[in-house]
Image (cartoon, helix red, strand yellow):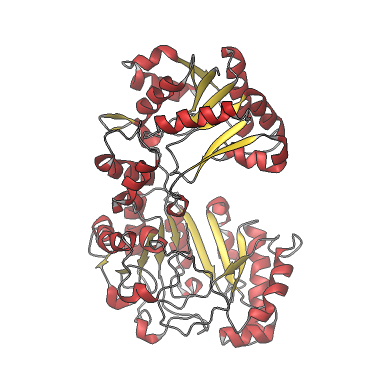
Length: 516
């Protein structure tokens, strides 16, 4: 079967141009992988600026002789699919092996297996399932690519690593699809070996020293197993900075931390010290998300707007979880943040479908229920499609779950159909267990919060997670380097990877939940 290779480079190449992997750049390694699996040519879908950069990286490689660049000023999913079809026709090939160009550890054995399965089963689209991301491409027929482009016509679908499947899901029965399954299911680890982002680069760099010598020709699963032997390849950088700017709250709810956790009674955080934290976090991981709502009501801080602007001015994403009580009085000041609406999300804690249950669950006046519901309307007017009413499932409010969900999920609701149903967090068994259902997986995984969260209390103390309490402090961001503090969590996470869960981790039921 004649096939070509199509590599997508129509995005910000970022760190993938660096020579950090096996003495080469991710781009060069990926292009050379493509040359080994193409019957004729390797097409690179690029932009003018990226073409020059890529050419300089592969100019001394033998793979250059089979490379042809296809340039566009703008790439979306429809344009990518259309170009894949056009490239196949131009080369007289039946199908294309497609991948992003920033993936340095593409597997030769898996590529060969996928092309074989595709041909043997007369498939139109073949993908690998259960493998780590970034080691396998996708095989797509020329006709299927053309159909995908037509399905995307008139829709604003960005070019992404899942764009083909995302589009096909809308008319899945129109395609003959085959799958190559991994012998080991790596999906729960969410591994993605790409090198253009800060987190991806860190993961790839940590993986290099532990890769098997014949990883390209050997079992593709061995790449994932090598990653699991190296905590730094799975736990790369902090992605979610959960910051307590105030320890004060309007309500002491059934979910509030108990005094024994030691996370209350702090003075409000200083804005100058917070700005320094944001700058350090941005330098460490430009893709990080900040929350201002750890163990406190952020709108009670007199400088809340300044805290929000400190995050948003660094081009980071911001999450604000609030009880909504003060939104009405601060509406005009909050409106000034709406210029950042594409990077700012709101969660309004409601936890009930009616005032009586609201008062019981949140230990609040019944009148506050209307304020919370009203806050969703006010915020949605400023931040459309970015406001989420939230219901934390508990034995005390489970009877109102369905009515809450039906009301808010409706597109005509004040949130426009946005809603979050959250599980109850006992804070590592610090609170009575009020969850009405056990959602934990059959096999315990390493904690997502240890892998991605950076929890900062109002005095600058950093704790491994929200459930650990102040006594588990591992450093202070007001006097120590953020990177050094983050590195101190490696040992505990490595224990989780090996199946050891000691101390408070043993009583935790949050390890499988995921923030950002």
